[in-house]
Image (tube, rainbow, N blue to C red; front, side, top):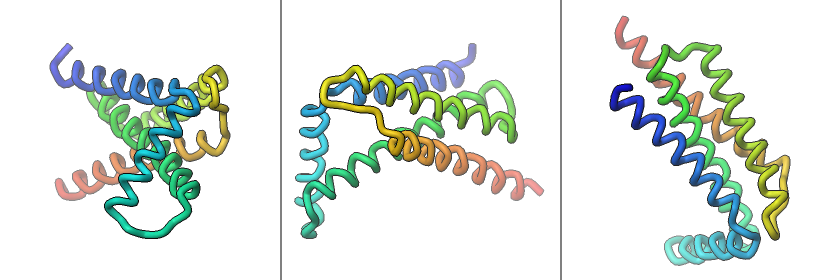
Length: 146
């Protein structure tokens, strides 16, 4: 296995563990992390928003970006083995979607956490956005070659 493949595998597996770690935090630990980010946000951007609303936005953005990165990393991994085409993009999306489902299922067993379909939708949208970005950048490169 070449170096790029090894790095791609390590990146994907590490990111899956990061997502699993965040999902393994109990409700109060997760809330403390979100509240810490809210305080940071309020220090840098002095706007008056409801802290609960801001915390909710930060949580949902975190879901989106976790899976946005996962979509990018899985695209990179698959690209190490074959050209990315419609079928590959679809399988990458299915993988990310199934991991999001398993992530929410996992939260059923974590104190103070519960699975939410909205989170699966946000996760899926994040991964789809990452996958689309790779697709779009690939198309731009292909057009420049012409």
